[in-house]
Image 1 (cartoon, rainbow, N blue to C red):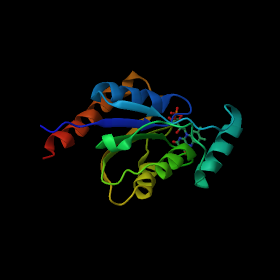
Image 2: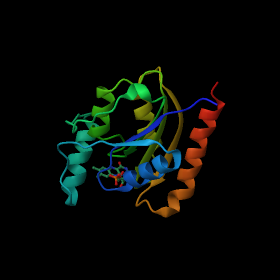
Image 3: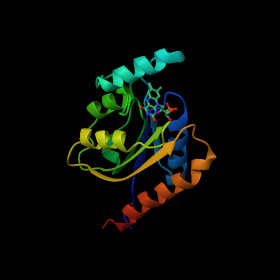
Length: 167
Ligand SMILES: Cc1cc2nc3c(=O)[nH]c(=O)nc-3n(C[C@H](O)[C@H](O)[C@H](O)COP(=O)(O)O)c2cc1C
């Protein structure tokens, strides 16, 4: 069977996406990369939603702390993002601008208050290079607790299924 190298890349402002990312990485024995923007919205109040939502809707980018990862060594990339105003936040946008993921198998997951991340995931899929094979996706409702573990492990099973199927 072919060896697969997997990395889980995520942004998390309030810990929910982080929970899912860490679970997947542990289960898949994958590497983990947390995107760290130099600037984030206000932590509290309506300002949080206003600033964050506006930046996401405008498709803004934000400077990320440098990460030293060679994406050439991975054939599978799992990307996790919170939903901000129905789309993905600037940190994810910046990440997608900064790396070349062409030809890699991509798995996407999101977390959101509504628990329905389909729209954000669709936008993320569009934003990815058309040559990427987005194989499966997972939506998790926040606040994320161990109640989500079963769905997360099922998602990992799906990732493995694709990997094992590859010739
Ligand atoms: C700026 C901002 C905008 C948000 N917009 C939405 C939204 O449009 N729909 C939704 O269901 N949840 C929305 N949420 C809730 C988050 O998607 C949800 O709490 C998510 O799990 C946060 O992930 P994190 O804890 O990893 O940052 C928003 C949260 C923030 C901070």
